[in-house]
Length: 108
Image (cartoon, rainbow, N blue to C red; front, side):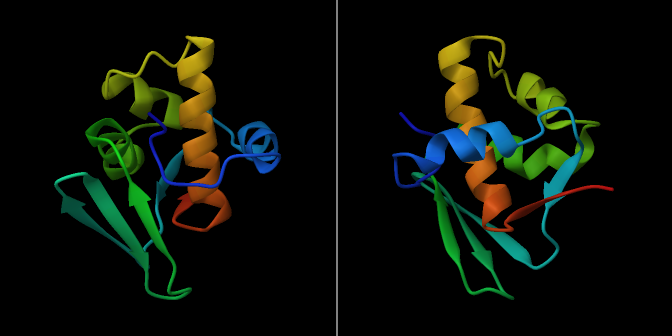
């Protein structure tokens, strides 16, 4: 199961390569996270974009990003086996898509 709703295809490699797992991240201040039975909805009040998170684990990662020094640490705290290649690919893709859509932002 892919953690976040996103179109599959050629953009997956770009989002995965661009996302910095070692950087600190947070939910964008203009984004609301609303828990749902399937996971959560993210709504960006500035861009009016809506994203669906399809698993409780990715919801936990996104919700706690700012509480950890890096996205890798947030994943580890949520129980994500980020060192497993297949798992890493899914979560890097999901987090990359959220960063590309400005739902999450890197902490500088």
